[in-house]
Image 1 (cartoon, helix red, strand yellow):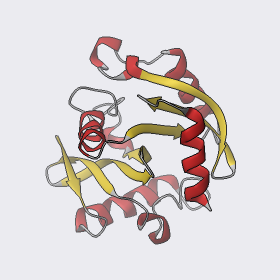
Image 2 (tube, rainbow, N blue to C red):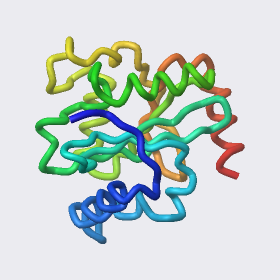
Image 3 (tube, rainbow, N blue to C red):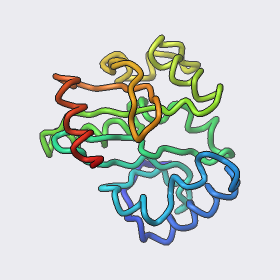
Length: 179
């Protein structure tokens, strides 16, 4: 498996979207994450590729001088054991996100919408550093700071930042972008 980039029109990404929607089902909160209207706001798609099949994605969106990562991020169920905590592993998504941020002089943030108890536990595990992987394998987690629970896209979300210098400036940019 390797990390690669793809476009939103890549046939492999379109197949991934179909599998994603099949896994989550139309009644799920996540079902519309990869709709056409939302895809046009994605600036870049990172993916885990196994045998020419996309099995996980982590998308990027630019908000002013901030790079939102993992929006959305999803791993197909059959690959979750292989790709556990793929965002923060040294051979995972974060190094590529970091390359984009450094190249474009952007600060990184991401959010977790705790729309169910499982996602709430996930968010709390991130900021309390209770991750089920061996923490030494998660190179970037120590540099990620919990920025609190804030209204983002009209819902409370757990916000995290990497080298975010001003949370007030981050929210100013987010609010301007969402208008």
